[in-house]
Image: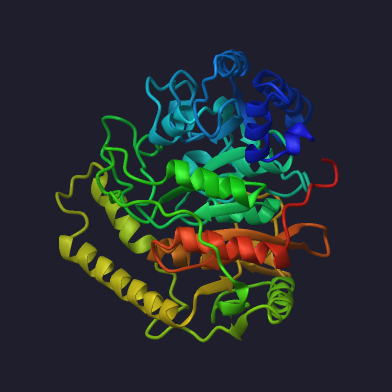
Length: 455
């Protein structure tokens, strides 16, 4: 077993059987971080001493016959926006450069409770805004597939660390593609659950004592090299925590067994009016052909009553942010304006839910292109030689942030430049367990994680 590229499930099994100790696994990952991180700048806060201490405790507990949980002794890193007790958490924001939380957020607490060993934190753009991972505290993170390309954002450090073997599992967060874009750019699996499926407590923005603005559309979910690890982490993270009272108290179903022969798959090369590179369109066409022997595959008709050319995500979320800021205007965003924004969102959600009455899943692009060259956040980007608005390439992601639908990002192939190109697998709201079952069935056709050339 290659320890630094083994799945979390493989590592947990090997630790429990005594084939390898938690300390040996942690040491191997710390050595890998020392070797590869200088070129990547993916891990920005390292707690090697704390990780080795926790690994020793895990080995001692196992010797007494105690198993803490499914991640017993397995190391991990966390995106630098999840609060971790005693470990610096900055969100790439200079005023938080020295912030050390006194508590674990829900994500860190649940991973710890199931036996995980935290090694450190991974880089993000400032306050998680942008799909170039760069900030004034730690600088730029590079993509292990090509150091001159971005790993995406805002979970860019997480994705780069996973692809390079610095960590077996990560947990990102997603408001405009921040799990899905880095997974796509680095050739990984990622899950954006339905909004409110995972607690947002302990996620920055959202510090204790501040107004909580992030209440809908934002999601927390796992990234990994192995789809089984995605399913395991989803089962650990999902569900109410007693603090985020908007997470419904419903059971999380086990991953479904799905027969491809009974599947109705809609495939879109790109929504009308959305900019997509020709290489991406060609990849989606080849994917549809590859799936035709196994399932009912149809080119996607546009859902009814939805103007796909409208980029709607910012409206209700921006209204909330503006209304939460101190202002001389007592009512900067009239309540009716926000209610109308939510009403428009309801109509979008209903249209997509009707679409999923006819189709089990939708396959569509993640972004307009594969990993972009490094650039400034907000600066125009190039797609097939055409300069476009910075946010335009993420339109397919932002649609399903806006509607709250769950999405699994799946790796597919490498483009002509040798960069990973994946796809979004979208399902009905609250259907994560079914969607992960579909993903597992499709993986046998569309492929798994590949190591970058230098890894």
